[in-house]
Image (cartoon, rainbow, N blue to C red; front, side):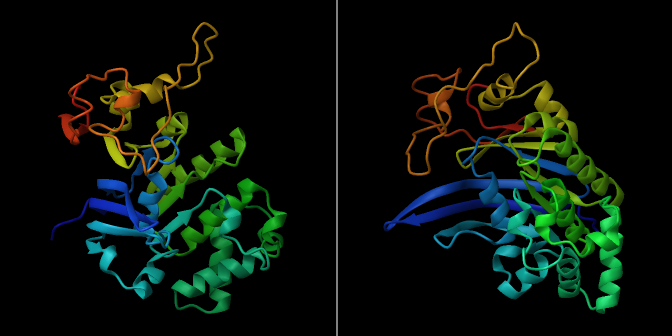
Length: 322
């Protein structure tokens, strides 16, 4: 029997948007493997394609978008040919989403207890009493105190951090094997961010859940991640273990991102990346990062499109200069 180390594989994924009878490409040949029981981070500036990659996995893309090529294999099954009924059974069950704003996933008209019970019963053949028992168990797992009282609370009665804990509890209640965390700490203060990330890390270790973490916070990524994938303008430009990425980045964009991190040293000035990421409608020949790149070479970088290549063991970069 062959054991699968990767719970999910994205192969050559091309995503497009339609607007005014024109098509604009948003994702270019995305290849990504998520190893079981690991935390994988997707990083990059806003608009680089991180969330669209995640929403492609969930099959929750905008109506004016479409996937032209590629496969998304979850435990060997191609989700792009799955029926909507099959996807509904997977979403919130085997594949769960922790959104930026948990209020988008919690119904303000129902108590937390009712929503947990409904979620559990939707994905398993249990009675309401059994579902309520499971709800208590997962609330305890995510360190929510005074459970009986909190089950009667409505979402607005919880803080942002507590709402995120409820969303995580829902994922655990349905035994999710893959959790997509889309900027799960963006709206939280620093101390609560650490609590939520510590909780996600504990869940990964205790239950062997695979986490796809979407983030622009490189400090957070360095502390909790096993593997890093860097995206720029719909392309994957670097992939590596977290150690290799932070100790020896091999793409100019990655180097620029790391150089722009704030420092407590008063003698060091914050270094910004010149310009701004291109829009989806902007056509750029060659490497899309070349207009902002410190290593740009005229006649090379503005002509040839770099492929993602292995530069050292399991360290991949899409750059003609490195």
